[in-house]
Length: 323
Ligand SMILES: C[S@@+](CC[C@H](N)C(=O)[O-])C[C@H]1O[C@@H](n2cnc3c(N)ncnc32)[C@H](O)[C@@H]1O
Image (cartoon, rainbow, N blue to C red; front, side):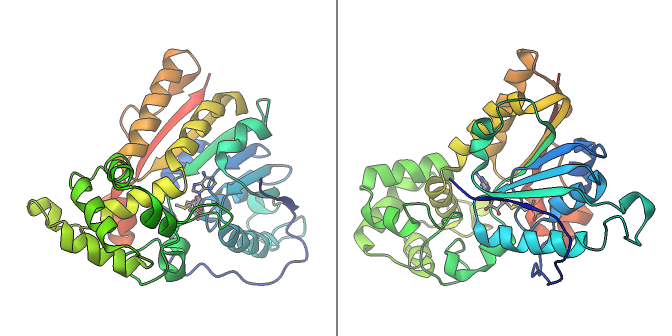
């Protein structure tokens, strides 16, 4: 279980590092959350605090922003960012009158799968989850998320997680490995890739794994030539190591219990496995009378945003309101 801390902005004056981070579908997410001044909002995936900041500045005092992230390094940056910027607010702040008071901010190093255990009653006016990995995680070669930089195969969002990608790649039997690459990567060449991995063991770095996959799995058609042959296998390992789909299902199951009537659930997903789970869960809960759906089809980024931030290309936002 992670640690929690309640932060107020006073007295903190050091800077944060968030170079290159651009929150995805920011305006759309904030619009669907319909942030109410003085309310309580949960950012289930604080990351580098991009969405959190926009929520916090609209909330004001006596509002409460509760942020979750599995990754202590991300929370550290988000904490600094929220403190540093929040310190400019407060009753004596000189910024725009509607933003003078900063809300209470509580940051928790924990999985959002735990929200049902942590909140047994309807406390939240809104929950946002911006799924997947952050630029901080992707760009740090030592975290092992990216085949574009050489690093140890780690892929854990939470460094206390028991199993690394290196352990999975080297210890899991061939059939299980093929199945997980197929299931979590939707990779049709999963058997061939699993066989090549098992034959090339031990594999300890991202570059080694990417080379083994590239040699084993030639693109089958023009569309596949556009993505790196290792993309789907890396996605599968990351999802498996961080049990991402189970966590998402838990979050979706608990959200109706945690949201107040009229409270909003907003989820941004980045691949079809996640989006399917979100779509089905929201539809099912709407059938049970728990939600009114706010998005019949997912909201996607416009060309402008995609030009500025290529990661936005695959983003899909779905939103629902607690009845
Ligand atoms: C795409 S980033 C979020 C970026 C953030 N919205 C921003 O604007 O800075 C996703 C974050 O969610 C975290 N995360 C992923 N799964 C999680 C889970 N089950 N529980 C808590 N945090 C999770 C990751 O560690 C990562 O920092």
